[in-house]
Image 1 (cartoon, rainbow, N blue to C red):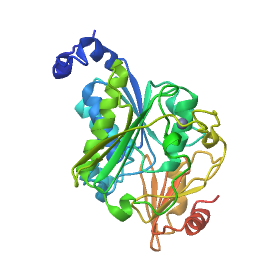
Image 2 (cartoon, protein in one colour; image 1 turned 45 degrees about the vertical axis):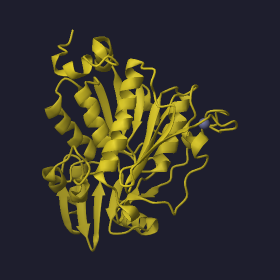
Image 3 (cartoon, rainbow, N blue to C red; image 1 turned 135 degrees about the vertical axis):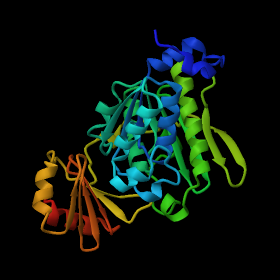
Length: 337
Ligand SMILES: [Zn+2]
């Protein structure tokens, strides 16, 4: 039996207790997106003693992340470390008793099953609805509870989705949100808003894992600048394609090869059906074109006014443009389609 001493402030709390703490230690959670929300969620869950955390993120640490992404430091930004890997390293210092598995990848219809099949629940730390619709379809289809969270500027929201029991994300937002809404690029984001929303979400995870009866039944909306905290009941929507009709359209093969990244002058290019890359060989091949840096996790090429960061799964994040066509062209030119 594990020593529960370090969790004494949780086990003395009646909602958790020793029985609940042992459940947490035996639990498995996937955190999808390890940025602002995801680092707070992952830190809270690791400190709380959730036994296994899978951290999935496609991106690397940059200096402007440090204002709110609590598991990273200046050395991570300097190294351009993948967020999932850097988060794992910091969590190992915080609680060596929990197992953390980093996954440096984009979560898509192709890989989502493998990422969620062996966990008890899924936490949304993403910054985009493309991934959330994939998560919603996957979690409803395979019966995994998941906690949606989103934050921008000074406000955010969270909703707990229990397949078969509660409304799902598509009951609230039937179709993907179009352009024109606030993003962290256009509206910024306060770290206090991130902390509040992420802490609500991580507490939902604890409730679900210990079987508490107080799970958030609707959608919570909070604005830390304007002092509002609202709770809206959300009913299941008859005709919802996902949770009523069982049409999991976001799990069908429809890979968008590019995605403009929130908060950045950058585009991700994800070639369909690509094999894994040999980073050292790629670095050698690109060496004469510009400044090249090769790490165990990525190759970075600085050429003209662009920065190309290429990962072993053949994804690239191309900085210096927000035009997908330009990004695809640069990918084809330097990496090859
Ligand atoms: Zn639904």
